[in-house]
Image 1 (tube, rainbow, N blue to C red):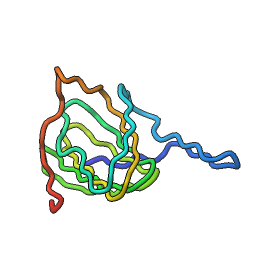
Image 2: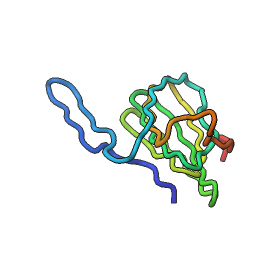
Image 3: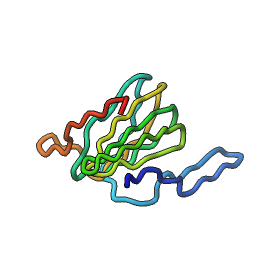
Image 4: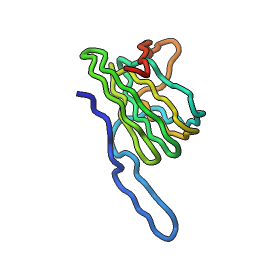
Length: 126
């Protein structure tokens, strides 16, 4: 079964503003901040050893997931303040429906001499 959502661990809203503890677990070695344009697609690959947490801070994206072993499929739509796990051996294609800002946590950093990225295209119709 594809594990997906992880609810915010803590949120405080008061006269000063908003404070959200997005995630309170995991061994993250890389933190990435990104901005994508509407219509952009990110991914269409999977990782054998890298676990990822993708969190939308502003915008809207569809995340298509396919388990490489079982071929189980799932689509989740993420808006502001929503996140999803991209587990190992799960291909992912993130389709940005509007300009979107995000944070991506990775269990291991990118290493061009030891790539853990394997192509696996997910058609939008799948």
